[in-house]
Image 1 (cartoon, rainbow, N blue to C red):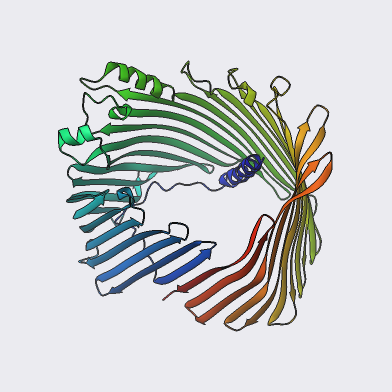
Image 2: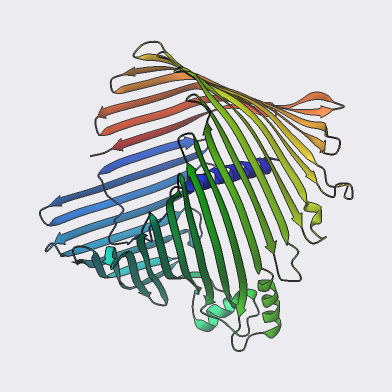
Length: 640
């Protein structure tokens, strides 16, 4: 049941994120490594966190300064985690970057860049130990009033992976054009070419992309985007004894090369009819992934001795209609997407034909095609200055097919969600809202071998909340009831399938009382009652199986004086579970945690802040011994 709740929450968030996406879209093609260093302001921060038996330390420093024609910058990011257990585990991750540039003229810069990354783990596995170091010289050349910028670069690199050390050269060029005018068109483009020759391995990056903008009459805009990228990464993996002996190597090498093509065209028409605008975009992309094993023996009959490839073709059409007026704001979005994925195995001379056919059948079983359609509708209507009604509707269908005759994962999924909300401002101090929400999802497997998983999930929610804000009191209260029903299509045929329900009531309160300019009282807490049980949708009857009662509250006293902020309070959490026997509720288990809490925040001076959050808890469990533990978070930020 928890899985269904998480799925429902994820879908809800995705829907409303999609609604916001109608207004804002990602248009940046890519980012260039030498143009945009990862340090832009001076800052030192460190964060120490302790939760249960896990300790985490994250320290970051960024510094950049200029003097005359020279600019110097560096950044250091160190992460360390310690897990205390039967066998203590320590993991460290370090990344260091250094940049020095000299402006020879307004059109020409010269620079030096250093990078160093180290990953280490206390576990005795070579795969958990890796490092990459590099030093590069580069120049920046500006042309045509800074509308074209070139970054040629050359350097040395040192790479360590699972006990293997490789050294070599890395070189390449980056380029960017910014709002380059060509007739009635404006063009933004980026190009990146990079090679890492660290024999016997080789890594490479190829990227080129451009975006063309054109404005027609009557506020009609057109955006055309093209991207091409290719990335190759070679990495070591343990080799079998026969291959190691024949080729005299410790580890084998796998090359992963990913190539992508992407084309899109978007047209926007603002107010082609009064208050009405339209936006449409078509996207076409192709992705190819090739995995190649460098050292192969003809006598080796392992499945992992073959090269494989994946081809993916995706087409998407997106249309949005917006209506905006003084009282009514509405949008309708339709998205149609189709994807085709093919997996293949690449033969080689002298291979074992029997193993090849088995591997080929295994790869073809992964082939799939899918069609996804979505309709999203949202509207806000102002009944008056203080009354507003909001309606959202979401409908989607997924059709998933697998061509392989031995694959039975073909299925259809349909999801419907509708939400209606009414909000009212009573006066400048008090407002409230009422929300009703319902959803239904239906999963249908095509083949009989999996049809027992066919099910319908229905969720109903009713929520009301209020906000009270005065000069001395701020209070938010929320009450919600929800019911989640899951029923299987063939429950009558298969006795192992049991439809179930999950009902829940939640009451939440957050209140802050201001006693004077320096002292205030803060309270936050909730009560949650949940019931699980067997359920019959036909008779709409439930047989309860399990009941959960969850109580949390945290009252705090807050003292604020100039640059100091102190909080002390009490944290209480109790979770009790009950089982049912002949409709009688019987106690099963309980978990109780309580103890003092504290927060200290100090602004030592304008740029330096120190924050400490900690709580000590006494833990009692009905099925184990009581114990105590401390939790804390220490954060220091210095913007210098």
